[in-house]
Image (cartoon, rainbow, N blue to C red):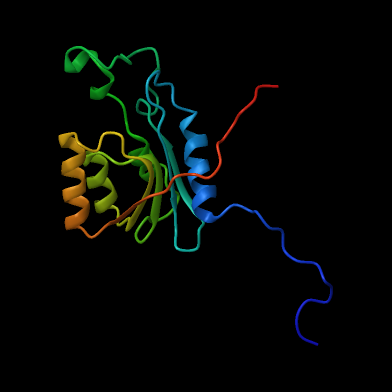
Length: 166
């Protein structure tokens, strides 16, 4: 006898891997305490097993009220001097080698994150937004990623993630 023993079929409408991991990136972004930008990243291996998660925030062990969250002012008076980006945190928090992995991220990576991605052997970036596309940091990122043959593609989620407090 070939085929299934009954007439039951698999469920339709289940999430694709891209949808699942992008939704996870949006969910982990909600851990960020940044008042203006919440970014999240998920690294998965070739078998679609999660090996790292990250969101943007201050380095581990630093009080979230100790440093500035401002976007404007002198460099040392803004978050930019202190925040670790979601992509970097996903690599730092990985529980396995990231060589040959994919990273799902809510924002297209900046040039610093691109260097981290390249150095750690990640071969594909799937991103939800490229809202800073025309700024020099992101132009440099694309040059780096192109030179390293890292595949980049945009994925617009089909669903919205909604959290409701009980």
